[in-house]
Image (cartoon, rainbow, N blue to C red; front, side, top):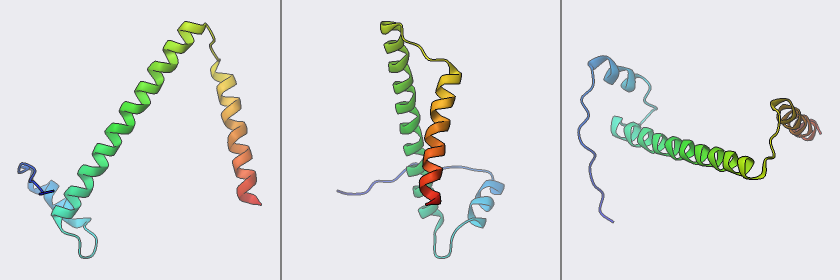
Length: 90
């Protein structure tokens, strides 16, 4: 598939300098911008999926009338964390 270009991006000189200052050895500004765009897209997709799961959970709770307190959720998550930490320590 042919590649295409993204429209030029006008930024203040300070922002360009900041971006150039964090480039890795051998990395170009274009590489950095492409990587940043990919990361931004992935972040937005993850946000959308998170919101969709939350809305589906809300709808399921309304449908079934089954709700959980924050304390119960916290305790369950804490138990999962404790169990995972125990596996790491072994």
